[in-house]
Length: 409
Ligand SMILES: *[C@@H]1O[C@H](CO)[C@@H](O)[C@H](O)[C@H]1NC(C)=O
Ligand SMILES: *[C@@H]1O[C@H](CO)[C@@H](O)[C@H](O)[C@H]1NC(C)=O
Ligand SMILES: *[C@@H]1O[C@H](CO)[C@@H](O)[C@H](O)[C@H]1NC(C)=O
Ligand SMILES: *[C@@H]1O[C@H](CO)[C@@H](O)[C@H](O)[C@H]1NC(C)=O
Ligand SMILES: *[C@@H]1O[C@H](CO)[C@@H](O)[C@H](O)[C@H]1NC(C)=O
Ligand SMILES: *[C@@H]1O[C@H](CO)[C@@H](O)[C@H](O)[C@H]1NC(C)=O
Ligand SMILES: *[C@@H]1O[C@H](CO)[C@@H](O)[C@H](O)[C@H]1NC(C)=O
Image 1 (cartoon, helix red, strand yellow):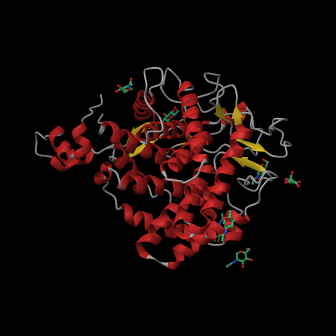
Image 2: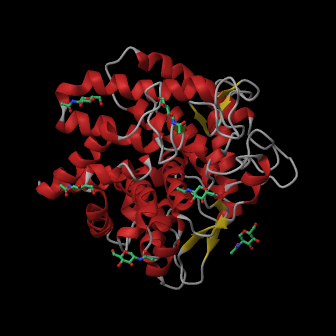
């Protein structure tokens, strides 16, 4: 039972008061329970103390920190941001300070996945606000680490320590960091950076494009020697929803920027092609997307929460930016996204007794350091309240709320 009201967009406070006229005078309670999902989920992540590193050996959490910082920075710029109750600014400071000592050495950074670059969001925010050199130096170390990162024979960045393997996953972080750093701190190098950035996604397009689905598989081995590598392209066999979700979020965020580059037109067109393939791949029953998108409905396969939230975000934002045009019922991105969003709320959002929200159904980790076959992808454990899912849900909610107003259940 959703209630959509355009008034909520323009006058969120008034709207909540109008829609939740308390009969017993309990106005504070009405206010707190009628907040939009974006703000409630963001507050819940903060209240759980998630996406902050406790020590140096928490480096696997860097992507959680980065994606949640991105979601928070989006949220505070959106009308829904008014509804946050936790102190997001303190959170950004704490999470950023927790990563500085982990990523401030460029040489050591190359031992971490490209995901490390995602924490640039918080570092940029704090550097802009405080001008403190430690944030600038940490950003510079991350930037240098891209130059030090090993590359395969085509110039493709290794995602991690596995020689010559490149993945879709790292692109969310690379695409968010590289142009931001260059436009703020290295403007003279914009052409070279754009060359490198487009080259990275071009290589993934060339090697990972799956003719059958029109989607991109998880990654490739440039040497084609991995057990899973396609003998012609080096591609891995499976279209994994979250890997493609990272890629699509990175791409739509990139296309939001004004990049003076002739390759933008090609990528706008590829973005539309991928979005079309994604709406083709939606599961008609749930309105969401399969963990293994290249095997819809196969035994063991399931609807996965993080990738589904990432696609919901991407479709809404693509429409909002004018990259995607709703033309009719056959190609109506908004209606696919709206149905997916309601399904995310129904299937994966859990209301806790204390008023916080949890997020279910996110697969923990899928690595190409594995058999990388169907069995592998569908047997990795789910992680309850994984920030990789809940932060993507915050981003999807922000877009839903911009488009339709707040969804109340
Ligand atoms: C985690 O890192 C700390 C130093 O930051 C170290 O003392 C500790 O042994 C490490 N713990 C594990 C489980 O590796
Ligand atoms: C960064 O780490 C490398 C390798 O561990 C070390 O040799 C170097 O001294 C460190 N650089 C700084 C500035 O601490
Ligand atoms: C990685 O690729 C390079 C060529 O760029 C090659 O020399 C090297 O042997 C490859 N490494 C492995 C482990 O296959
Ligand atoms: C400019 O960017 C290129 C591509 O990443 C890099 O190789 C080069 O070192 C950068 N130059 C400077 C001055 O940072
Ligand atoms: C697309 O779907 C949305 C939401 O269901 C609807 O409001 C809109 O009219 C549709 N647009 C077109 C062009 O059919
Ligand atoms: C989370 O999802 C799993 C698998 O669908 C389900 O068994 C479990 O009950 C759900 N947890 C909650 C708290 O809803
Ligand atoms: C890759 O997989 C092998 C075999 O399961 C494991 O021993 C190794 O630790 C993995 N590498 C990394 C970097 O996790």
